[in-house]
Image 1 (cartoon, helix red, strand yellow):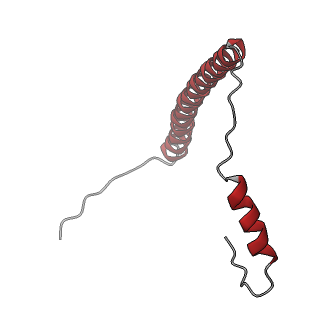
Image 2 (cartoon, rainbow, N blue to C red; image 1 turned 180 degrees about the horizontal axis):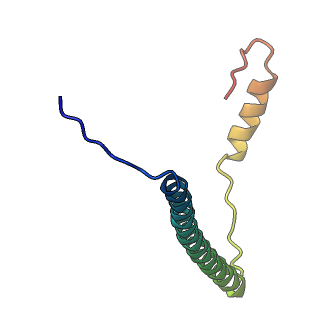
Amino acid sequence: MLVIEITVNVLWLPLLIAFSAFAGFFLRSAQNKKSTKRVHSLENEMLKNHAEILKLNKEIVDLTNSLPNNKTRIVNMKDKDNAATDEKEANDPLKIKTVK
């Protein structure tokens, strides 16, 4: 049976654990800093996009307000004769009322 013997000094083991903990802390803090920077850049991009959208909407409102108000005529779709017959049919007690 092959056995590999490794001898470790008792003082080196806590130092190795402490060094690993500090290295992990610094690596994780670097990742957090990088992700925070990315989040801030995306937030700034979103703010710029929303500001641009609001500016374009304001331009649209200003353009629609600057146009002259065209008064269009409203034409009734029902004739007066049809309206009179509709009223007669609505008052008919024998007719079944339908929901439209």
